[in-house]
Length: 161
Ligand SMILES: CC(C)(COP(=O)(O)OP(=O)(O)OC[C@H]1O[C@@H](n2cnc3c(N)ncnc32)[C@H](O)[C@@H]1OP(=O)(O)O)[C@@H](O)C(=O)NCCC(=O)NCCS
Image (cartoon, rainbow, N blue to C red):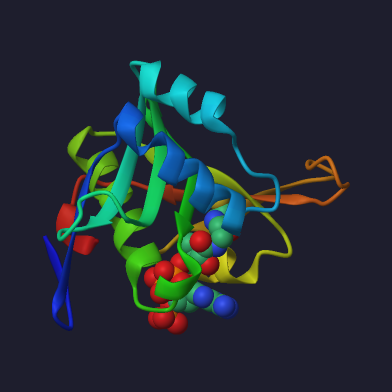
């Protein structure tokens, strides 16, 4: 449980009941938002995790979410988002740290993701947590934008996160 001023928040695995709120938040904050089918498919994949950060009062109002895969000896972070009204309060960092801690516990060798080059907030968030740009994928997105591939080596020391 995380505490912020008087409100408390918890991170838990998403369920089918969270789909409407997840889709609404995704629509509000992402350039190319996932729909309910995207999220439902992730809930069904055995190697995928969808975590939601909710306020404890309702356990259903979403502050943020993270979607990631454990594949081979890697963790692939596919999606992270924080509601506009909760930005700049450390929730993005909290979500990514949780994924880093998971990767460490699972003895993954690295965690990686793709992000739009123009997404300065996300690039800043990842670099601040020790991710490094290891590749540029030219015209990766449907609007022609390049992607950065960012990577973080994992050494099994969760206390770093
Ligand atoms: C990226 C995102 C998750 C950050 O969430 P957040 O809760 O506001 O982030 P935090 O408050 O934890 O900030 C962590 C770091 O991110 C960086 N950051 C956050 N907002 C930023 C901004 N507007 N400009 C530059 N850097 C920013 C900073 O380095 C910050 O660290 P600092 O506070 O020590 O300076 C949020 O902006 C978001 O949901 N964006 C839309 C979805 C998205 O682009 N997801 C990532 C791609 S999959």
